[in-house]
Image 1 (tube, helix red, strand yellow):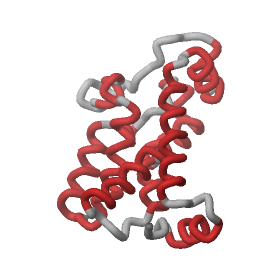
Image 2 (cartoon, rainbow, N blue to C red; image 1 turned 180 degrees about the vertical axis):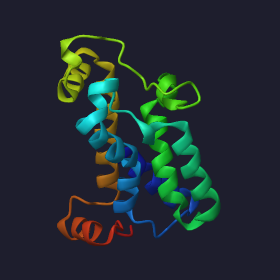
Image 3 (cartoon, helix red, strand yellow; image 1 turned 120 degrees about the vertical axis):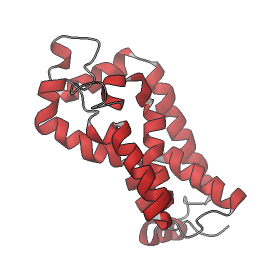
Image 4 (cartoon, rainbow, N blue to C red; image 1 turned 90 degrees about the vertical axis):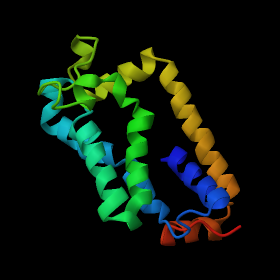
Length: 173
């Protein structure tokens, strides 16, 4: 979400695009694939596929969102771009059994590591973040992006933050 907010902020400033975008909706769109797939995984699919990256992370869904945002619902293109940016930041092409579903068969990506640590979705994330330090780089980058966005729009000041939360619009600089 932070990467997307900073990218939109810079695009508005440098390119003058979508000046009235609602950052709250942009944030929801940027996390949209996870908002859809994670509950599905928690309730059913994780036990079967050992993955929380499911339908909303597929090329099929991303192409559908692109088609809708670029064509039929052009005023919503900024939200479509935020949704599509999620696939880019998740590096979905590294998981071809998910990304190209159902073109490569019905099976979703199954984690490379098999074992008891993968039996529960919460433990899978815990083990991923404690055993793969490169993931922390992405998280720290997101924190830096968020701090830059807050600093650029002076959201550390209560009136500015309140306006942002109430309207979805950062204050004008």
